[in-house]
Image (spheres, rainbow, N blue to C red):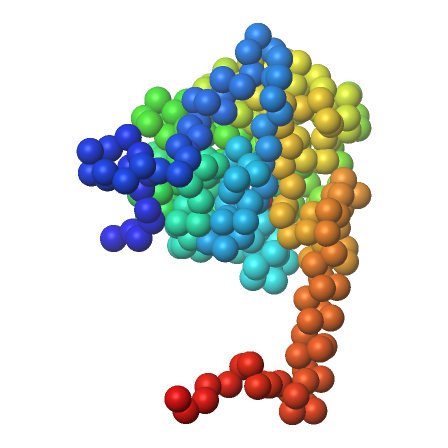
Length: 288
Ligand code: KIV
C-alpha cells in the first residue's frame, strides 16, 4: 500500500478544488515545438517531502535522482542504490508536491538486463510512489527498452553523455565528447532515445557544442546539466546549488550557502545548551 496523495483534481473522488493542477509529461514534451522551446524547462532534484514542498512551485519537474546516494546516504557512487530507496524517496517527493511533475531514476542493476526487467522495476516505482515517469541512463543500447516502456504506459527520460552509473566503465566523472568519435556517439545515442519515444533526454557533462548539436538534433526536449544554456531545460542537484557541499563540479552555480548557515546555527545551539541559556523562558511549558 502506498501513502502518496493522488492528484484527484479531475476526479469525482475529490470534491475539493486543488490549489494547482500538476503538470503532465505530455505538457513537458510539448514545450518543444518544431525544434524550439520558448519556455525552458526548470528541473531540480528532490529527495524529501519538505524539500519538494519548497521547490515545487518554482519547478516544472522534480527529479528524484539516484544522486541521493552521495547527497543523502554518503555513498561513494550511485551503484549501490536500490529500488526500495528510490521508491521511498519518490513517494516522499510526490507527497510534498502538487504542481511539478515527478520523475524518478531507475537505479543501477534494475533495468539494463532486458526491457521486461526494466518494465517490472519501473512499474513498481510508479505504483509505490505515484511518480509519473522514470529516467534511465544509456544510449542506443537502451533504445529498445525506452520503446518497450513508453508503449506500455511508462514515460521515459533518457540520460546521455556523462552517465554516473557507468563510472566503472568511464573511469571517472570527467566531461564527455572531447573526441570526434565520442561526440558522434553521444549525438547518435540521444537520437536513438528520441526516436524510441523518450519524452526528454538529460545531457550531462558534455562539451558545449555537443549539447547544442544534441538539442538541435532531437525532436524531444533536452535537459542540460554541465551542458549548455541552449538546452531546452536545465537540471541541477539541489543540494549542490544550495551550497550544502564544499566540493562541487565546475558547472554548479551556488545560489545559497546553506552549509555555512547550518554550521553556524548548530554552533549557536551548542553554545546555548552548554551555557544553559537554551531552553529559555519562551521554550518551556509552565503549569497553568
Ligand atoms: O541522479 C541525478 O540527480 C541525476 C541528475 C543530476 C540529472 O541524474
